[in-house]
Length: 64
View 1 (cartoon, rainbow, N blue to C red):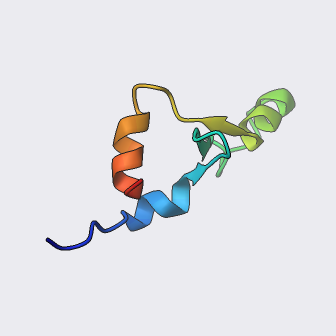
View 2 (view 1 turned 90 degrees about the horizontal axis):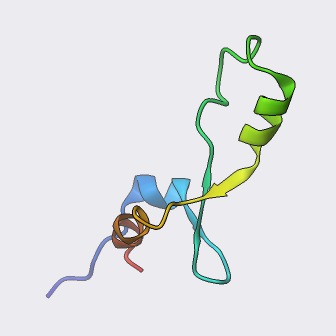
């Protein structure tokens, strides 16, 4: 049986933490930033965690 391949787009977007959770970046921080509040942009710059319901799909894409 062949080896499982890691999804290339997923490995660029997600990272595994030490405790096994999956880190992600927030959306809506690329362009049209003039109309967004300073506090909102600051929050979007921080990393978030993948929700529990999405974690199995992301782990499958990362071949973990």
